[in-house]
Each structure stands twice: as C-alpha cells, then as structure tokens.
Amino acid sequence: MQCEICQKREATIHLTEITDGVRTETHLCEHCAAEEGVAVKSHIPINELLSSLLSVQPSDEELGGYSGEELSCPHCGFTLEKFREKAVLGCPYDYDVFGKSLLPLIKKTHDGNTKHCGKVPSRVPEDSKKQLKLAKLRQQLDEAVRSEDYELAAKLRDKMAEND
Amino acid sequence: MKLTDISDKLNEWFSGAGPMSDVVISSRVRLARNLAGHKFLSRCSNAEKSVILKKLKGVLMSLDLGDDVFYLSVDGAPVLNRRFLVERHLISQHHAFGKGPRGVVIARREFFTAMINEEDHLRMQVLKSGCQLSQCIDQINRIDDMVEEKLAYAFSPRYGYLTACPTNLGTAIRISVMLHLPALKITGQIEKFLNATRALGLAVRGLFGEGTEAAGDFYQLSNQITLGVSEQEIVHRFEHVVIPEIAEYENAARETLLSEQEYLLDDKISRAMALLKNAHLISSQEALFLLSHLRLGLNMHEHLGASTPAIDRLCALRGDHCADSKNEGLSIATINRLFMLTLPAHLQLNYGKELDSAHRDALRAKIIRATLSG
Ligand SMILES: [Zn+2]
Ligand SMILES: [Zn+2]
Image 1 (cartoon, rainbow over the protein chains, first blue to last red):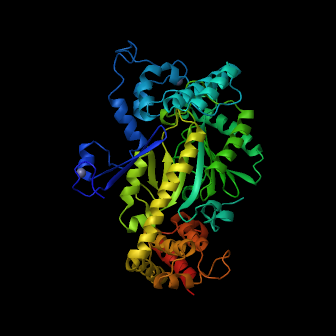
Image 2 (cartoon, rainbow over the protein chains, first blue to last red):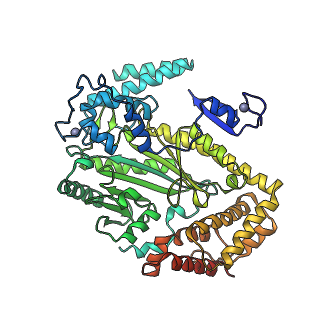
Image 3 (tube, chains in turn blue, yellow):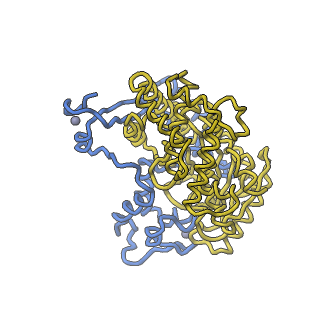
C-alpha cells in the first residue's frame, strides 16, 4: 500500500480514528508520519506521562494566587510538591483543594473530558444522581443533533423532560 | 486452602475456552475503589491501613460469589508465593512488592480477586476466558453493588469514583483483553497492530514477563481513559470495534502464512517442536517463544482446518502427562498448561523448593519433554 501523503513510499503506519461513530483510516509511511507528528512510540508509562505533564505546570496563576507559599490539604497535609514526586494524591479532598492545578492534567489524561459519566453508587443522594443523568442525556442529545438523528433527539428530549 | 492446591492446575481464564479463543485468551474488568472517610494510602499510617484492610476483608469474605473464597496476607507471604500470585494474574507486581498491611481475596476458581491496599484501598477484578467482556462487567458490577451496600465509597458527582491517581478517575475501570498474535509477529506486521491500538487510545503491554516485550506473542490491551466515558461505552467499543479488528488482522496473517508462506510457518513449528522435545535447558523466555508457535499450529488446525507437514506432525504428538486431555493428541489446553506451569514461580512452588536459574531451566526442559514425548 502506498503512503497517502507522498504517494511514493510504502505505508507502514496505519491509523484508525473514530470520531462521532465515523471510522476513518489513514495510511502513511514512517517518514510522512513523523512529519505529521504521529507518535510511533509505544505506550508511555503513566508515571512518565504524569511527570512530564506536571513539570510544565502548575503556574502561579493556576495555583490561584498562592505563589511562593505552598498550599497544603487541611485533611491530609498533602502538597502538590508531594504529588509531583509520588504521582498519587493524599486523600479524596485533594481533588477540591488542588482542583485548579489538577484540572489540566485530568483533561490531558482523559482526552479533554472533565465530567464523570457512568456508574453512580446507590448511596449518592437522589439529587446528584438526577443531575448526572441529565448531564448524560444532554451529551447524548448534542451528539444526536450533530449527527442529524432527529428521531433520537426527540426521544432524548422527552426523556430529559421526564427527569426534570 | 493452600497455594499448592491451585499451583499445579491450569486456571479457568487460561483454559482456551470461550468465544474467539483462538485469538482472545481472556477478558478482564478491574475496578478501583476507595473508602469514604479515609485518606488515600500514600498518607495512611500502617495502623490506618490495617483498619481499611479489616473492613474490606470482612465485607469481601462475607459475599456470596458462588464459589469458595479465601484470603491471603500479601505482606506476610514468602516472596515465592507473591511471585506465583503475580504469574497467575491474581495480584499486580505493585501489590506483591508494595509496603504495609495488604492482602488479597481470591475466589477458588480464580475468576475473581480483590487486592486490598494496592494503589487504591480496593482493586477488584473479574477474569474470564475468551472474549467475554460483557459477562465480566455484569459480574463485577453485581459484586461492586454488594460491597457498596456495606461500605461507602469516595465519590464525587463531578469526578466519579475518586482514585489515588487522577489517571484512573471517573469510572475507575480498567478493561483488558489478552491476545495471542503469533501470525502478526511472524509476518512482520505487529507494528501495524501496535499503531492501530495507539490510534484508538489504548495501552499495550506484554502478558508474561517484565517490561513491554511480549513474550510468547501475548499482548494485553487496555483502555486508558476513565473519565467522561461510561463503562458500557468502553465495553461496547472493545467488543464491536477493537477486538474484531485485531482478530481480523491476525486471522488474515494466518491465512497468508497458509496460502503463501507455508515453508515459513512449517519452519517455525518444526523448529519449536525439535527444540522443545530435545532441549535439556530452556529459559522461561525461550519456552514462551517456542510454545507460542505450537499454539499457533494447533489453533490453525482447529479453526482453519490447516494441514501442512509440520502441523500434522504437531497434532500427532500425544501430549502425555496431562490429566485433562484424553490422550487424543495434543490439545490447546495442554500447551496453555505448559505456558503457565513452566513460569519460574510455578515451577518452584510445584517442585517444593526454590531453585537457581540453571536448575529451573533443566526442570522446565524436563517437564516439557515429558509432556511432548509420545
Ligand atoms: Zn509518505
Ligand atoms: Zn488531602
């Protein structure tokens, strides 16, 4: 198979991308793949990823004006310095305490996602459950509209009205 | 229950049964959970770890899983036993050689294990042979619900299940399939597979041994994104996109070997047979590498009806020494058994004492020769 870009060399890099349920395939040679910035490295260990992401942040701004003095969690005494070193947090509250600094990392490791979608423990108050359900429906609705599935969109709107 | 009760047997997830088992060895779903009201483990004293361990052990041991359940202390276990548990995928390397009070709850048939005080307070998994992700997720969900009836998890409506490392946040689910891809390797197309998986945002690692080198052509493929994607969406993607696509690649490579490169295929199988039947010293890496080619030959015979001079000779081997084969020729189960039972810790545990590497290599070669003679 020929490379799609140079149309000369043999394509050895084969990429499959799925966006909104549509599958696209790209076939490139090593050379053009490198030019295009396609990563041909094998999967990066989490720790390496973490340290590389954290080494460029947080900026003083992201720390919310805490520049200079080290912010620490009132529940467990954890600091961002320690997180950078260990790659794990100290307690569940750290997600609130260091929320601003962690957000870019969370976004990056989860493909831009910042909101939970999926299982919810039965103990969670009904209010929160309802909100999660609505958020999920809204997301599905957006997708339905984008892919012009108006039948599905109408169904989802009805469901949202029921849950509201 | 002692480890030696299971150490000389093949585990269910490696039985060679289940859908698509010629390519998909097994399916696994793992959930990470932390208890509300406790710090994450990095900030826990040993005393607090003991409290968490006691709570979780009590609840897990009381669950009705439809099988005998036993508990093992990991920090109190001999190193050889810990290595054995890692080889059998019952605990992680991290858990085996971590710090402080920790343990594991194991269902006797090994479809379920729960690591207590690994990186998170609780990491539990359901493992099944072949492509059975839907069954895995249904079962782990039921178990998760039972635990949650008794203990409150750390959860936030925004971020989902809160985990020690932000990379696991959200559903905190890790879905993996273990694949055997020898034909892609032989035909030099394994890069194609690796690129496809990267493009899909998945992590790949070897199944046996350390590091990323895939000994025995076994690969483990896992999701990396856990936030903003539901459990069902990930499973659906694996079952309907990822697995079919890779199985198609591998099967196409097997067909190519058969139709265009029979000499190459027969060379690999014949060399593997010759070495395995005659060698007196075999390292674990070499055994995995050679057994992989036997497994390929048997699967091609069974699933593609392949018949070549080498495959015919392979199928005629008796596969002695194996309780679960009826001496009707070499079976996949016998080969899988050799894969598992000749791993270093298995070998030593079944031998009854620790051996240096030269003695392990000799014992491994002896077991393989005895099994394949006939
Ligand atoms: Zn090119
Ligand atoms: Zn904290």
